[in-house]
Image (cartoon, rainbow, N blue to C red; front, top):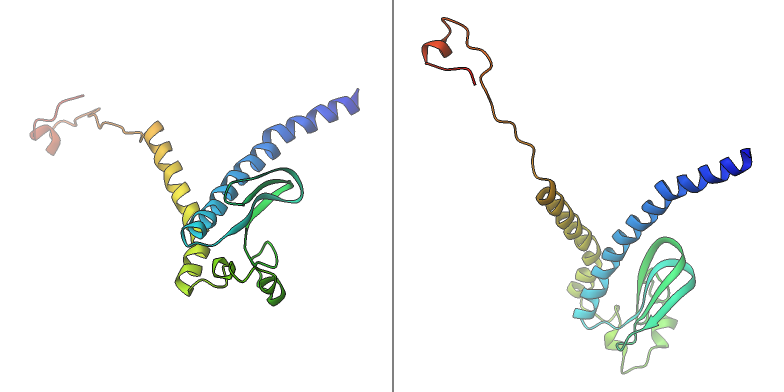
Length: 169
């Protein structure tokens, strides 16, 4: 019975701590990578993959733009892989760029002007900042600010408050 109790306790711990942590972190990672993805598309860079998680692929779908949207086994991060990238960290490699069709080379991250590359790189943290602002604004709107109205509880005889005519309540 002690083993069963320990298993139930472990599953309860997973349900209350680990699972919500993974869900929240994946939400944050998704918005971060979505920032890179959207600005990359806006700048004309071809995106080969948008992955939530690392490791073996669990689910995948290819959209009409040719981006492979994938959900991977290890939910510890994510990445956007641009055309011509040697790896998921957008590492540049001469061999990887040489393998790109010459007509498509202008759509690689490496071929973009510096201001486009800077915008694509900055888009992830900016997306996280926007997400935080939206969440905190929503929480403030939903729960508001606690306010306490000041009330007079006692007026000392002969005090400036009594002379000014302050009354209880």
